Length: 216
Image: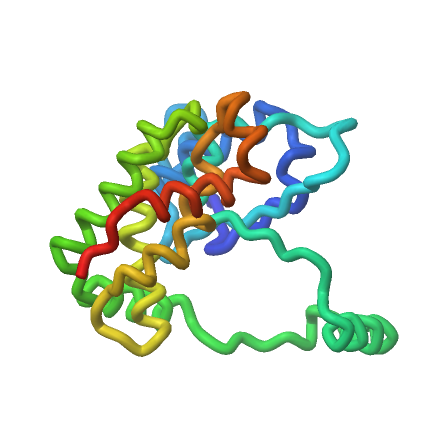
């Protein structure tokens, strides 16, 4: 009997070999795995979360663009605040075990929430706004590789989820503007000119968003 998880955490994913990384492509896209010619579908919900070492290059591997495109968002945690770091010190002293953790929501409840998110309204003008931003990433002279159709779908789903968790049943253009660097930033590649103009791909997306008219 095969056993699979609902949430897979790949710690420092860029340290895994290209073969290991390529094994994630099918499961992240199709929510299934193929073993010896047999296909096993995963139970819902299923999600891959990963951390990436942004500093060291020794012993790390480049993450293929196709794999990066399968992550719906990418965020940088940065350093914790002084208060949060104090909490980290205190909790480390207590040596809190994961055995003490208790679940706060079930997989069934998560699926129910996912179904509710589908009912969040997104107008034609907001959908067009998403497409216009994506199209601009493919035209801008400082971007070599623009956002793929998979990125458009990711933004559409993320915008609905973002509106839902903020207590709304509709998507606003401001939701798209806020999410754009996190949803699109890891899906583009800069030209040599772009690397001299902007600090990061997230900054490039902010520049693209400023070039697109916001629907009223």
